[in-house]
Structures are given as structure tokens and as C-alpha cells.
Amino acid sequence: MTERRILADRAANIWSSFQRNVDPLARGAQITADPDVEADSIGGLASAKEEILTYAYAQTSPDVYGRWGTFPPSAMLMIGRRGSGKSLLAEYLAARTQTAFVRVDVPRMVLDVIHGAPKIGELVQGWTQALEEMPPVTVFFDELDFTRAHEMGNRASELPIGPIMDLLFELIDRSLEVEECLVIGSTSHPDTLPEAFLSPGRFERIVEVNPIFPDDVVEALQIHAASAESRAGRPLFRD
Image (cartoon, rainbow, N blue to C red; front, side, top):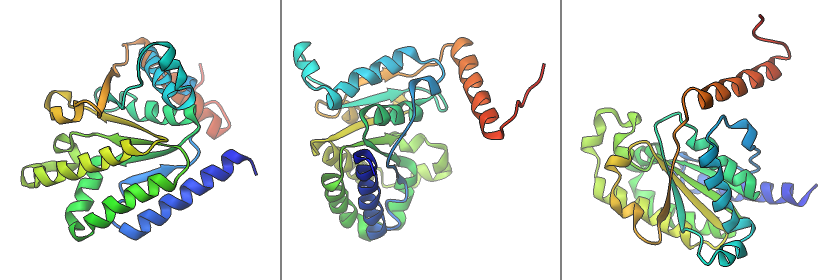
């Protein structure tokens, strides 16, 4: 068994144990212990990919930032409409840095927290402990502006926004405190994202994820078609 496989299994075991202890609060935080997304599996988005590679140096070659006379950003925020490729880019970051990948579906976690409020203390404490015990990890907070998520429907106006925001900031800040943890976030609604997310020490680097039409869209469709044909073992489209 390779060292990478051992680390991946360890990450998966630690995270699974954490989820069981705080169920159902962490169901929205799923782990991919050994991500394998490559650049050529993402259609277009050349500029965003370059930004991901630059941020990856914070994990793979931190001395590079020193040679540039600067410091790596505390965290990176991707902005772009739904379906633009933000989740794939986040997983690509984890694959590039050979870290486990935890995707936090923020709207889903918010709904779970509302129904499991008595366990919030356990969630926060367990979150920190799990990340500190894990091998290097990338944590992706997906759709930070949860009030605009379609999953919320008409319930957004009924949410205790202040306490939920405090919890979300707590999870983000605790993740940032872990030495070998890369933090990346996303939003489809940058116009209404609270400025506190962009304060120094949080999401200091903003990256726009905007596919170029039609080139990036065509490339993405070609990648999906090739993947589907590979799974099917035969051509799906004929001239």
C-alpha cells in the first residue's frame, strides 16, 4: 500500500468518525479522500486554473511566495454562476496538492444545523479536532451566501441569520488555524455576500470563474461526451 493510500484511508476514517459523532449536523460535509480531478478534465477556464495552481504553491512549494516577495492568501474565494465549474476547480486544487478534499455544502449544513441545534458545540469542537488529526486537507465551503441558495426556498426569511453566520465564520476561522489545511470557498451571489467573508485573514484572494462562450462550453461538452463514451464502452454519437 502506498503512502498516499495510507494517508487517504486515515483521512477518510477520521472524517467518518467525526460525522458519526455529530450526526446529522455534518452530513453536508463530505470527504473525497483521494481526489483525482486533472486540469484536462475541466473544460476551458484557463485563467481560473492558473489561479488554482498559484494558490496550490501554498501547500506544495510555500517558499515560492517568499521568492515573489509576498505571502500566500489565507483563503481563496471563487465567484461565478451555478454550474460554471467552481466545485471541479476546488477538487482540482486538492488533487494538485495531494490532499484530502472536504466539500461543505453550506446550505445543506445550515438546514441540518437548524434541526440539530443542541449539538452545535460538539460540531465546532469536533471540527477542529478532526482537521488537526487529519493529514493535509483542502476544505471547500460551497455557496457561502446560503440565504440565496435554491435549497432554502421560502425558508430563507425565517432563518436566524446572525447565529448561523457566527457558526459559519467559526468553522472557517478554525479551518484557517490548522497548519496543513487549504481553505477555498465559492458563491454564486457575490453581490449579496457579507463583506466579513472578505476581511483580512479570511478570503483574501477572489477569482472569477466565468466560462468563455462558446469555446469553454464546447470544450466542457466534449469532455463530458468522451467520459460518457468511456463509461459506456462504445460511441454514443455517430456521424
